[in-house]
Length: 223
Image (cartoon, rainbow, N blue to C red):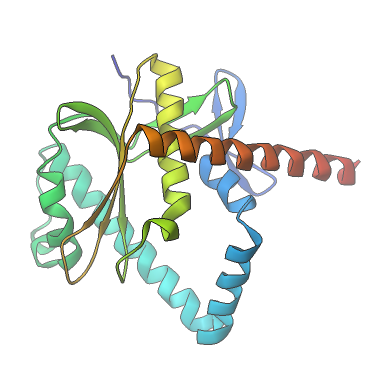
């Protein structure tokens, strides 16, 4: 039913896009980054100013390396491939591993997907099954526990991917999971049911509309 799609990345105005069937689509992360609410942008600026730009860059770089390492281990685990020996001593791995054991079946891992109707694309972490039903999984790491209201963009990302998969494969995925690995406790599981997905889908469509308006403004300025 599901087919792995290799990402065909292209850069447009220094932003990540994908090419499918001759069409170019902005990535979900590009859309969300460009339309981040003003208060979130200001909070990020205050954080960088408070701790210093050098330290902020180091924290971001460390988080990126941590995420890449854990994602690689998760992929190998779900594909039943050999894991690096050192991963067992990784506290983030120990945090997320019990969640992975509950994934009942894996259909696609790190596959691209696009929505030809709403015109966007991206790469999702895992399409599998949870409690006997199709589920879209998103794996994250964090230095401290999260609250649902803090991870709105993660939820929007998952929702956008689910809508794209539903449109592309003509299925009905009605749940998503954001699992956040932590260094000192079991991973947090944020379960997005059908009601949550509807809520976040409406928000994503608003962000997508704003993105399109920003592109129109930019085109006018460039002419």
